[in-house]
Amino acid sequence: MKGARAGGSPPTAPEAGPRITLYGIATSRAGRCGWAPQEIGLPYEHVPIHFNDGSTRTPAYRAINPNERIPTLVDGELVLFESMAINHYLADRYDGGLRPDGDAANARALMWSFWGNNEIENLLRPLLRNRLFLPEPDRDAAQGALAASQLDKPLRVLDDALAGRDYLLGDALSVADLNVSHGMFWLPLAGVDLAPFPRVAGWLARLAARPALQKTWGGAGPVLDPRDLRPRGEVDPRRGF
Image 1: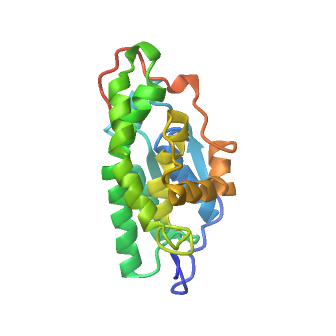
Image 2 (image 1 turned 90 degrees about the vertical axis):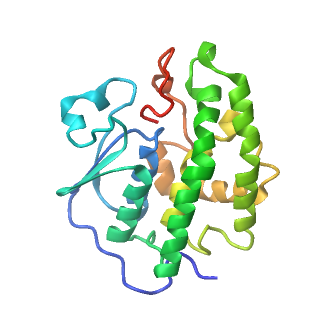
Image 3 (image 1 turned 60 degrees about the vertical axis):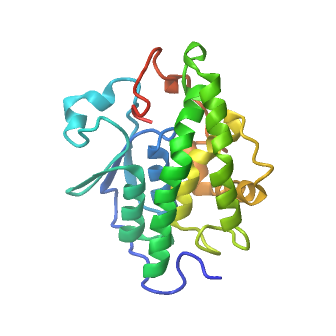
């Protein structure tokens, strides 16, 4: 079974020196966008603005991202927000082995990215907020437990899809793996047992061992910074994260 790229056009060589600027922090969705250029070998400037310190709400930042969220990527005159769209752009423009090989593989990568957003991340948000990112007094244990139980179905779908392959598109890493997996590395920290999904657990372990991802994290795994805790009484479930 072939992977993300098996022949086709050669990778696009990055230009000398960073021309890309990425805004955001590794413990947010911006982390997947920091991971992609590390895999590609693409130089970039990292501006680690945080969702909790007001820096997403400055006039300068609103000028490039009126949503007041992270990440944002600037590549020359191109400005992009939405982390999965950013990664598909980086894979398509710079490749580095992340670009799917051909129209069918690209369609599957897009399918998995949309699936990850709809089936996984929509449940990660209440799970992680109520088990990790909210201060203890603001957590709703019932909401966290419900989200954890509802993850069983998409985790089973993913486990079945990984049968006989190391990565989502086959034998090689692609942008689809980055997009779907990134938030899932928090699952064990949030008390989700992956033992019933051994192929998912193995896939995450392979990805977590990649030097590019560890460089993005600054270590062997994601670490919750106390600054990442949401303010007491916050009501917007999508603010920044």
